[in-house]
Amino acid sequence: MSEIAFHGITKTYPDGTEAVRALNLRIESGSFTVFVGPSGCGKTTSMRMINRMVNPTAGIITLDGRDISTVDPVRLRLGIGYVIQSGGLLPNRRVLDNVATVPMLLGRSRRAARAAALEVLDRVGLDRGLADRYPAQLSGGQQQRVGVARALAADPPVLLMDEPFSAVDPVVRAELQVEMQRLQAQLHKTIVFVTHDIDEAITLGDKIAVFGRGGMLQQFDAPERVLAQPATDFVAGFVGRDRGYRGLSFRSAHDVALHDIRTVTAEQIAELRLDQGEWALIVDGDGKPGGWVDVTGVEAVRGGKPLGESVSAGGSLFAAGGDLRQALDAAISSPSGVGVAVDEDGVVRGGVLATEVLTRLAEQRAAEDTRRNQEFFDQGAS
Image 1 (tube, rainbow, N blue to C red):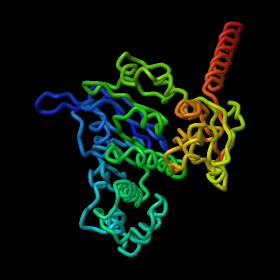
Image 2: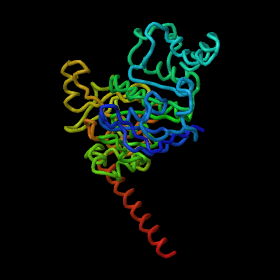
Image 3: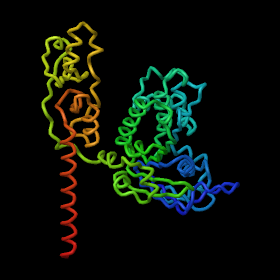
Image 4: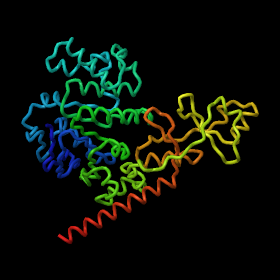
């Protein structure tokens, strides 16, 4: 068990700045909680109070019911994993010794700590061949994975993550988010994750704590409820006008129809016959998509131009059976107007149409309205 609770927490600095005000919050054991909000709203300060890197002015924080102010701060921190932006790695230590740092501080032998570090590198998807490199020899994404590995090396029940992915590019950031979801599904840590990115919060969090100016907690709820029912005008504004689109992430696309797509290999393009406005999907020998080609592209190929000048990007791919947001994005970002649904191996399963995704959304909402009306009727009858 590793439940964290804030009881009337306030943090006021000597100059009178109130960073956090009257915070009451309970973080369930084994949950992934995201603190989100604009700069200066107290989210990082609140997280750093959990491991006593910042001490509150008033109130109590408990870990499994124990007041953390009664625990030696060094001992407390050795039992809590901590990941910061850019990994926070020791530049003069090899990857292996960076990861082994906390186990050694806890008294494990160097050999045992390094053996455990290698296992953790495997867990976070890093090649053991990187173990002898120094942080400067790694990419940004690799450094962040090492940072996560170091935080997990002593198997702490609590993991604090302070905007860990904000310094990497969007592609690497998405990969790291998927990796965190995979790790949490395996390890069930109590994770507190700080970000200013609402999309990242929605992707990762079981619960989202939205902080506003002046360190006030505006809403603490499941991400789908934050999107559908923002508690304050501030939350509605912070989540953004496209919160309805983001909310599609929590709606299944399982019943959206998949249509046949005309496919062609690169070798077959020269013989392809398409009418004006028609598209064909280029696939490799395994049936994995590579891009779209239209009638203009075919003429370009026949005219002797390189294939790269005639093939349009394929748009976003949609994992068959995923959510409505993925399905709609795949359809509207595709040059053909057809989203490409692929199976877990990346092989084309069929195509989805934006109009049919929206139809499915309307059907789901109608079913929800019917269910709510029935529940209201049943309650009245009882």
